[in-house]
Length: 305
Length: 335
Image (tube, rainbow over all chains, first blue to last red; front, side):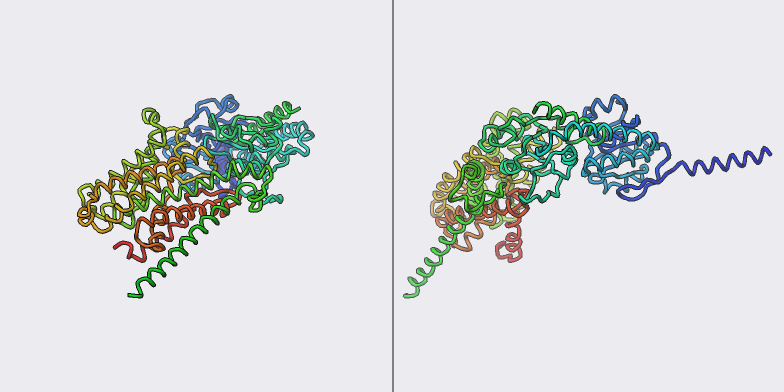
């Protein structure tokens, strides 16, 4: 009898170990990941957002070699024990391998070509973080929740996030009716507008803002997410509200100050040009990031009134 | 002997027609460049009866860019003509002899090292261009009086590659510096304004005049080293003067717009094809052709990838590279 119990226990044991792995469908196919990965390496900021939202700390982060790019809102949850694996553009395979991870989360645009190499180091899933819009980034949260073995916790957090965003939408939407708003980042050399298909563009659209960006002047849409824009082009977009994220001081947009065409912009004439933290708006994506952006927009609309 | 004046007359007519065609091309290029841009509602018709908005767009944004494109064509064309004359090598151009890259290196040093920053970016670009030119000619044996064609091109490639490697190295130093330096790796006048355009154009007219003064020396160099020396023009002096002229024109162009390849190579060839080998005629012809080519490139840069504007350097290469290939396949140019 004892032997039988042992055999049954053993069988269940084998069954349960074979059930510990799960299949996750992602941008580049399906990957079998361990049930509760403990050593996770993330290669985009939105994946930190996902992990932090269910209280999981990654062991390695592609933080662009700058630890302060992982903002305090994240480090409060994930601590600062992570190892930098280099830039998001070209993360160090050596450092990643040395961490002996059991899950790597990579970006479709930046890392598709290295998928094979990553997969040799650890099970890897690839999601469209950089090129995806806000709605896609929230959908990716659910995939990541399953990949890290916390689907229920993630579902709860996503529901709470959606409720919070719905509340922001209710606050902003009545004031956004018939108002166009445009976000762009500017460094020392140029201005890049984030088009309606971009992450920030889709957020502004959700809050009820119109976009003046229309390449043919007839409502056609840009295919690109980030559009290099000259002052002459900006004067045609001419939104009611301009939101700039500046990566340099003085920025390229600052150099336009005093030019007739710039001073004649609707937003400039009405004093509706606002600066936000470029890093939070432009590089971060996810739930906490979107909530920060929404809070910025609420603040901006408060100033306009 | 009747046929000689008739031949002269025919040549004169061909030359006159070419000159008229050239002026026409400059005018068409300028009008096309002015009538396209970021605003789709400011077009050709607004050139003649602009409202307030169109006037602002034309005078503040498009005019300085159009003039900058023309001046770039003049500067690079003259620089290329001078280099091809003093080296007697049809492959010589600011890009191939490493002079553009040397200018970019000078600029990068001005941004990275404060001691060079004090000199000012424009002068650093000229010094870098001159240094690269002198180094290339030294490698080719030019100051000894006998320039080796193969060593000249190889030397230029080596000097250019080295300069460019240093420029690229500065990318890795610091993000903010990298963003400033990256501007000097591709020719771009997308958001240029009057201050930069005036810095550029200030050298174009003196450049043409200097080249006119040197044109007779260029003609003598074409006769060969010994003939030139026999006629009282030491080719080494011509080499030095031509290098200074090319370095100043290429250096200023790079400091304003970044390096632009092929213009300096293609324009002198096209001018010789149309107007013959006399440098006294070639100098104004190259200036006109260079301006026309770059005006065309500027207009195309706004149209080809609309609504996003392409860098003029990329368009110039698109136009110039096939010509370069044709030159290489024809092989006569390499004799």
